[in-house]
Amino acid sequence: MNAPHPPSPLLVTAFNGLVAAYDRMNGSTAWTFLVPGKSVPGMRPRPTHVEVRDGRVFVFAGGSDGVLKKRVFLDVHVLDYESGRPLWTQRVAPAHAPNFTSASVLVEDGQVIVAYQDVLVAFAADSGRPQWTRSSEHGDGGSYSLQLQMGIHGARARVVT
Image 1: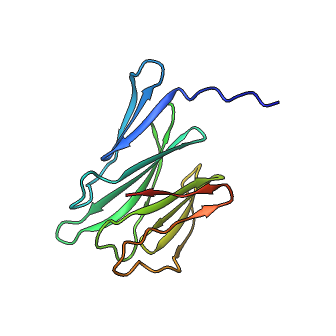
Image 2: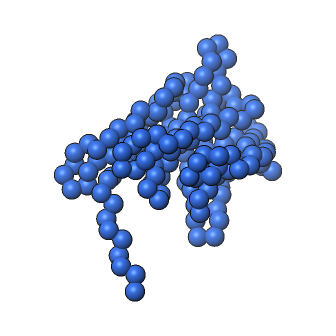
Image 3: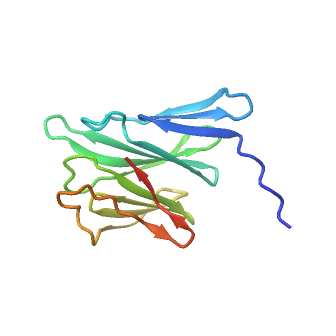
């Protein structure tokens, strides 16, 4: 008979580029992480999503760079659950992304899979090593905001908006 899992000591929250972890017993702040870089033009609040798995916090955040011609992207940051220390970062940047719409993310079985605009990307969850990148069969959504749904046996992707 399996023993029940001990409760997770931290509550992790994310909003507008700030990730915070709170002690579940007393509510004190354990650590914070501010997503580096610029927010997405015209989007308030900054798209930010977290998922906690296997002693890690997976942070998915929209961002932009450039001055006159903005490029938007989705950054994947992985933090240590206990300390908030950054472990790795990878960027998902489609070839043509005039604005940030949404992304679908799936963290399962040691893999992080991201669908953003017309790109599908897989990373190793422990190291951030890129495993593969490809174009989606669905294209970029045309005049619609592409929100690709993903699922594997027993798990379904979450949406970053």
